[in-house]
Image 1 (cartoon, rainbow, N blue to C red):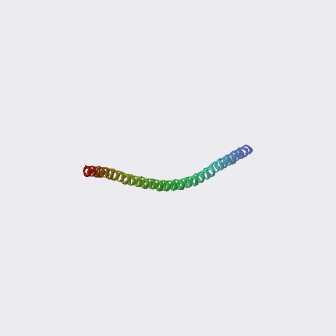
Image 2: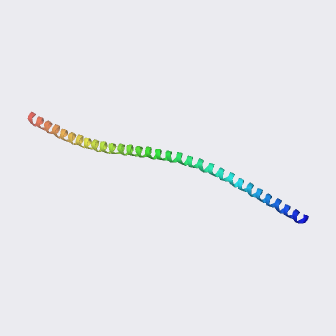
Length: 112
C-alpha cells in the first residue's frame, strides 16, 4: 500500500509541476501580448500623427498649386496684353512714319 501511496504522491508532484509550467508559459504569452499591445498603441499614435501631417501637407499643397495656377493665368493674360501693346505700338509707328513721309513730301512739293 505504501508503494501505491508513493506513486500517487509522484503523480501529484508531476501534476503540480505541469500546472506550474503551464502557468509560467501562460505568463510569458501574457507578457508578449502586453508588449504587442503597447507597440500597437504606439504605432496607432504614430499613424494618427502621420495622417494628420499628411492631411495638412495635402491642404497646403492644394493651396500652393492654386496660387501657382493663378500666377500662370495672370502671367498669360499680362503677356497677351503686352503683345497687343507691342502690335499697337508697331502699327502706330508705321502710321507715324507714313504720315511723316507724307508731310515731308507735301512740304517738298510746296517748296518747289
